[in-house]
Length: 293
Ligand SMILES: [Zn+2]
Image (cartoon, rainbow, N blue to C red; front, side):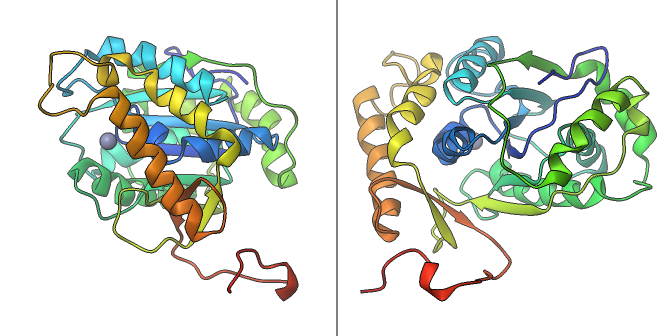
């Protein structure tokens, strides 16, 4: 998998793209799911929308290095951070178009967004911003696309990360897009072909809402924790922000307890919760998982 570089767009297709407001959001809410998808041979990617400059601890540069370390631990093939203002993300046309550009390059079948009700305003806004960008990305003529995309290309920070996962077992339409994207990467990014993700799911770990489904992350809980703790500037015990942040040991206890709670809802040990707006579709009643009684 090739990275998006500051000088332009190259092929970098993924099956699952997690979009989040801040570096470490993905590690907290759906890192185990990304690990599970990678273990299934799917290609995974992360788009963080901010650089994390407003954090109490650490700098944007530190968080960039930590995010790269975390992505390797999560088996993610591609990760990029836009430069939307940390703490003041807006659902504007300009920001939607920045995400449209990424969606048309990465061409995911599934997009993971934060749940739309959240304590942090950035998280709630990203739910709507991401959804609307997914819609816009599928339009043949996105309004105002040319100037906004031209502005965003030089600011993109990209990282080449871990080696891509083995060939995925996903819909042929997604796999077959890779060669065409690579070819299109050599063209002007304004000419990227429209792409609309098939599925949008919302990571609801921190929302007071009943999940639509749980992903069993039992085999990946320790690795997910290691990815979160890669953000040493945020979570290692230190004086700065001591009144705001919980001790390192308690982070483990809290995150494992949350995963255990959601795992119990689905009859597994550790789980991550998601909400989907659509109803489920069943082919065979005898194969529907999660025991009733
Ligand atoms: Zn966040």
